[in-house]
Length: 137
Image (cartoon, rainbow, N blue to C red; front, side):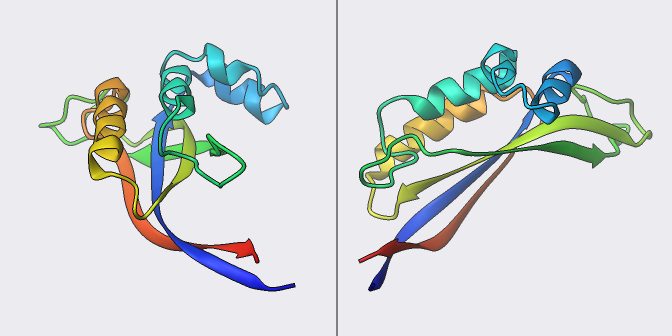
């Protein structure tokens, strides 16, 4: 077997979810994802036809990792959840997807603009990085 690789852009979106959604996800209730208002919106955007999640014969590939995010809003913050000066824990799902490194920038930017518009946090956590994905040759 030969192994090849291809350059990709990684996109990781830290998405707040309702506590009930996280509880259902942790108890194997994956169907709850689409019913959560924020997570459902993010997944709908990423599942549309476009450059995100392109694995050749597979499309719309998204890794989904449930968990929590901890933060402390400052006095100047306007947090979606939590109180200034107090440590807060937010039920969060991390969505990771990949875009071919040579995907048209306009198409990628259009999706990222919609992600940012749908994200409720004052400062959304969306990571963009570079990676190489291994493929069987």
